[in-house]
Image: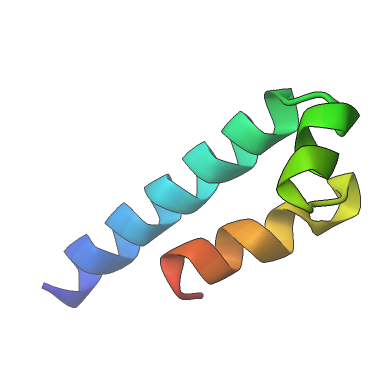
Length: 48
């Protein structure tokens, strides 16, 4: 169960990073996120 949960969390993390990375700086700014914060936000979103 732990391995499955870890793999799912990793997949969600990578998906979040990819989706945020495709956004423009203006769109990120509207969300209150700076481009250099994308990985931190993605980690927080999946609980890493």
